[in-house]
Length: 79
Image 1 (cartoon, helix red, strand yellow):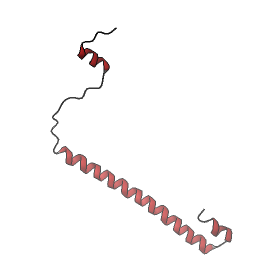
Image 2 (cartoon, helix red, strand yellow; image 1 turned 45 degrees about the vertical axis):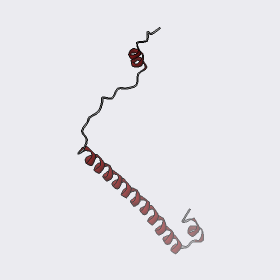
Image 3 (cartoon, one colour; image 1 turned 90 degrees about the vertical axis):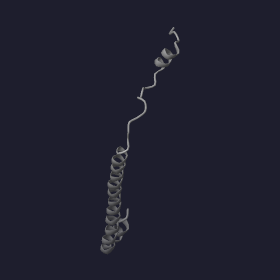
Image 4 (spheres, one colour; image 1 turned 180 degrees about the vertical axis):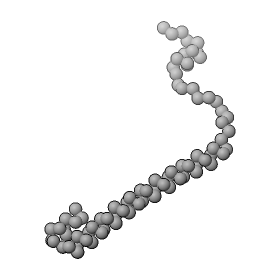
């Protein structure tokens, strides 16, 4: 759509300028996405590496939610 006007008018200069604008915008978007991908991956790695230095693993073990376990703990009889 950016180049449609230049093609309809037959303007070679307009075609080159429009293509330059389109190529620059496309390159800018791709470069921005690549920068964000690398930045987010680096931040994630720094967070994981930094936080693992201080992790002590104290607490209680995970147990999945279960109605059967609740019934057993309360001593209710199943019908």
